[in-house]
Image (cartoon, rainbow, N blue to C red; front, side, top):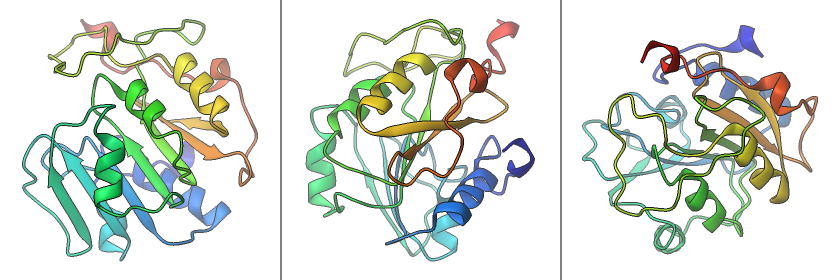
Length: 208
């Protein structure tokens, strides 16, 4: 999928990969949920919002930019409150895209959403850990990532095992080693490759 990476608003070519995946599996309700959007200028779903998708954004920071089809809530996300946030927004149990990037408790929040079945999931992994290493950051609801800190989030192997248990196949990791893409197993038309085949190192890890 490398040739499909392209950036409009995403950080690492995710815009192109999202487009390619949905070209292959189709869309349903065109609902996307993203948390960890920062100020809203550089996100995985801003382009979708411009294309008419209904997007729900959650972040602890205020959003400097939203689109008319975006519902934004400023909130601190935890594994305890994420389901109630979904319920409050009346997000359906099945929707097209979920993107998780909160630089810390990502694994625990993903596990809390086990009853939701998005068709595609984009999830930040910690590419400081090699593809054979299991690592899950101990849950800490007050955690805030500090620049260049390496012990955050979860390794790709640990996230892949979790998502596999929840019915998802790992299909791609973008070339900068930040985000992994998972497709629901009943929809997956892509080759199911191993963590070892798809893992990419986090681009800045060797510099610090």
